[in-house]
Length: 276
Image 1 (cartoon, one colour):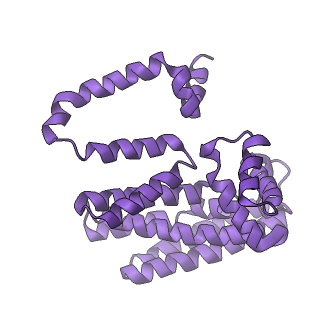
Image 2 (cartoon, helix red, strand yellow):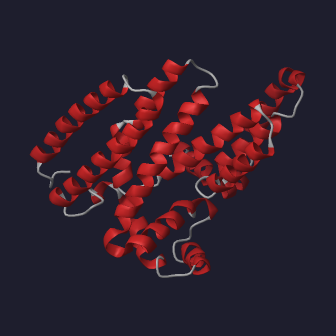
Image 3 (tube, one colour):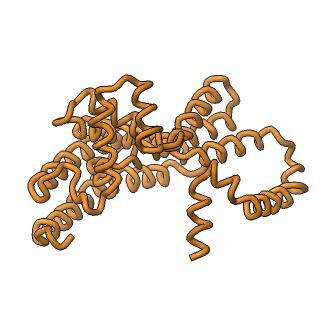
């Protein structure tokens, strides 16, 4: 932004690049267990440093609020809902903000952070949540990759995901992506675990993940359920019928976009953008 002094921002980018390069180089020489501990320590250090940088340069712990409209809105909601009961919170989100089910996930999580940390430290608590969830999502991503790739390649994936600088910015700036991505990767991991070994344990956590993902974006939960149900179809079904099913779904969506947009608002957005 024009009103921000460029020197601190340029200095931050330069420093972050050095820290990132050094951390990833060190990580390549670590064993797996040490790697995930190091990712956690790296995220703690970088997130706390970035938070202090935001406070010093912008005066706000969320950073560049002109470019993060969602962060400010989420924080305003949390300021109110931290003093409400759970049922009152859901009523507030539905009536005051016109949120649907797919918007409940992050405001509810952020409410818990602000209940713990209060107005002054609520976002700091949420940053702590994000750091832990990002580390866990890296672990689940690594374990999922092990089902398809060699261990060395999986380690590279974990390094690239765990140390990426965008994750540090998201963890501090009050956005929902860290929480959302954790539950997506969590659900995907237990889906593949169920494919490998069909246990009640795996299906329970998979369905729990599907339910939680629906509170962020319901169409992703529908996608997971469709994939899950397709696991029970005979193999020859895919070759014979799947092309017709996909074409049929496209035709239905294009002809009944108004109906589908009620359940999947992003389709309505895409449709409206295509008309402009």
